[in-house]
Length: 244
Length: 273
Image 1: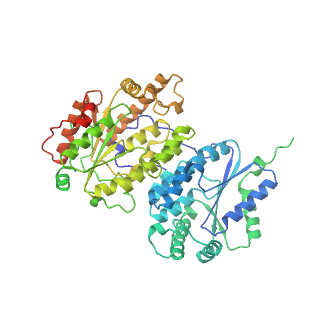
Image 2 (image 1 turned 90 degrees about the vertical axis):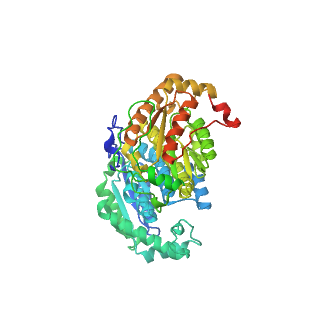
Image 3 (image 1 turned 135 degrees about the vertical axis):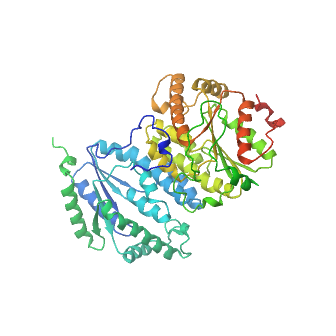
């Protein structure tokens, strides 16, 4: 995605730099799950992974969490509450870049089926809810390869929030969006923050070709549908164990 | 006092006296304080201070000039705040550790540097500018853009990341030839660093060749950035005192300071050569 900047016409680019990660310039495939906390996405991706693992497919699972690279910075920033919407976003982008350059891209080039629990859309939805501008975020993550399938697990806000609140003794400061100053009550802040994220996800369904999955459907029934869609959209035989 | 000086002078197109070459073409319309959308929550009209950037490669004399300018400005009664690369509380040390390991990839490093930059900008520089201080930046987004661009990261991508950054009131570029930078750096540390010679780019196995080729690539990016952003280019190879004189003249005219007389104190006299 090209962002126009005010001074761009002032001088000619000396030699166009190579753009990173052209789409589909590799034999691998990328399947992504997205959705708010408590939407059931991780459970479903886990089951998909088990199915493929048991079948002996060449797969790799990756998730949206802090690599050792930024762990100390994230901890420092969170403990002392120093993160702004911009630095929060950039730190996660650096973390993602590390995963992308050292894991995802080499695996895609090496012909793996990569399964990602959360992807760039998490940043678009969450950092957007924090106030980062959408086009700035789109540009920031433009080096990421486009997924072959993006499953969007959607559960009503109450269902999702109750699942999380029931399972966690205490919501963390940034997790609850307390840095936004929406509410002094953590559960209420979390709820409003998740609602904003949910709205941002909903707006991407068409533009980013999400496959909408109803998070209230029974687990095994939903998994059956997920496997069916993967089988239709991905040439799985490409990742099947090689016969001797 | 800073505020009134700024209101009359700050918005004029740059009319500095670069040592060489013509002043870069700049749009006549007064530039806004940000390149694009301002950072979330920042009101540009609150920023009454002045942001002055000194860019240039290692060995161009940047840090020396910043010491001297700080003393001069303080002697004139201006409060000064400084910033530089890898000085953020948030990730400054993490970047040092990454560089020491040589294991980091280009995009990750570029984004760690941008985190470092914005942490300083939001938590130190913007508060200083709101209080009317003068901020002297020992390098700015331009070094970060140049370093990433020579490693193949798109220029539009990089400008997109930094479009929420504050546009400096004045940007000086201390231009030196790579050979001179090499001599100065070698004299200073008796060796040439892995990153300053761009060894991650596999340009040459010979350290000198690698340094020269890397710095030449960086210099070419700066020539482009200079046109695009209207740098005031100075001859970084002339003496410390003459570079300092040009800097003082240009800054004085921007701030409305009458006297540009300056003799470094005893503590800084050793820099004056």
